[in-house]
Length: 235
Image (cartoon, rainbow, N blue to C red):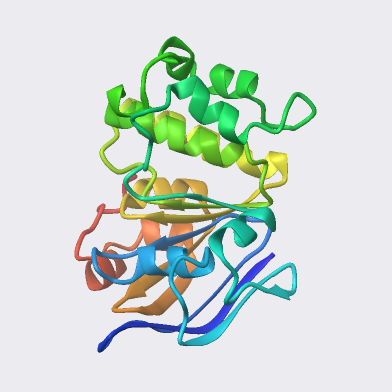
């Protein structure tokens, strides 16, 4: 579905992405790594928000590199950005109406409210009147309502309470049943390993290793080497 090959991104003298290659098919793929490793830049490069100096990005075999973000979105890729990016001037319901594709779509506003009942309760509240967890639900819902073929999520569990994280994991696991691909960028190792069967580890702008989720979850030494943390084999 999505293939990134030999991608380089530079900001002035800073060489942020250094030959990144990754592919996403029907199964979710997660990218983990410390802060400042280039994960968000990769998401932005795929979406056309930053320009790649070298490399290729293809979606369903057609090139994406050089296309504007709205063109990438129309091709069937939706982004849940880090930081949520909700609008203070729009209510929850207005956010959802902006991207709703109507009753014939798989994801509708009604389904969003069933999946995230808290949003239904807060439907008249402005985007910045919500808690961090509610804003994240709204950002995810906004992407799902586009009914994309691929969703890119940049740190969706950041700042969420554990009970909301558990619900998030259930929602992300269910996306495959809707035929959506998922590229998940996470620092929460538990979320990454419970959602995606394959984990790519990013270190200083490169994919340093790609391994099965269970292998990483059960290997504290690999976690310490690449991430500086270890779960001790527990989720």
